[in-house]
Picture (cartoon, rainbow, N blue to C red):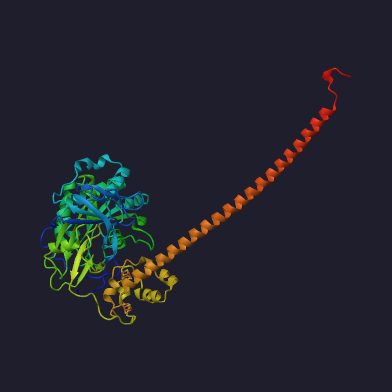
Length: 511
Ligand code: SF4
Ligand code: SF4
């Protein structure tokens, strides 16, 4: 990668990185073949696992609902081709870096038959906002930029706030990844259609579709689609190609000049950010009746023979997709899911393509930047941090397990972009450390919340027992009173009876 430079534009820090996208964008998107086996994890999203509604041996059509969610944060899962459900069992998945997670396994029948989509099509203007949110949830749609947050939940939350702008994120600033660029070129009208549906559901009148300055073909297609739509609420905006300008908070600042305060969300400053792929998925489901069963993904790096972008069915094994890129080259050493800056290294290619998989990267180097050395306090990491944190301080406080200082220095605001790692001359794996420290803080918070809940339960139980005891004591006193009264009444009755007996019976007439 080229030497980084500090950006002097609106954003603090960031890096200008070599793109490595020429090869994968040279040809149009290729349709990946239907694989013999589809492996569909029950968690492909933020939230809880989807609940299977199919049985082993059941035949399913493409688009058919396989697993649903119970109203908690989650997303539905649909079959991505026709075939038979042969197992529901744990398989390695990328979310867990190759660890196992329950998956629905479908043996495809080669017919690739899909359910009748006409039953699910709607004219968006006929639907109320609440119906659109419900439909989006039923379509299994999640944020396709990588966060995979259930879209319906994000829209509902946004609608409750002071929302003004929808921002469609086409800023794909991480090296190697080009799936959004190809989507914008091939499906610009779907993105525009999705934007209009989202504006209708959110009941706002402003949408920015944002793209980097180095994507002229995508820009041309989007400009054309916006013009054809005649919708003046849609504005195409270009931003400079600087990593990580596609991160949500940074994008909001670039487009609107609004800064998202620490600990808050873009919606708190009136902006909702959605990936361009998510908007296209909304259009395909609402207007065309196609639930989320496939996505475009980039297969790239010097560890594959022919880098390209493929449209593949969710559940397709990564090993099969590597085949679409001509297979591994002799130099292949490292498999990464995601980009070079934020992706996760995998130990196996038996993992499936999921909703979050925007890139399958195979590199020739082994990932070691060099031996780790002590921090020399050069400050380079702070210069490039887009969140204006002090990574070297976080490094020291993390090692010292100083929770208060980690919080005070904004660890929780770290977006794990990897810029600090990239420039550190001491090769300190800062981002990995911060990810670890953040999960420890979250665990501490969770433990504290759990302890607080236990204490509340204990207090509630003690209060209940005390009240029950008081109640019992009150009952006992009342019973004694009753007994005393009953006893007095009984004695009175006996006395009255005996008095009665001792009096002469006047009715007998005897004197
Ligand atoms: S870049 Fe590395 S060596 Fe320099 S201050 Fe940051 S952590 Fe220390
Ligand atoms: S990984 Fe975190 S600390 Fe490092 S540059 Fe990115 S936001 Fe800043």
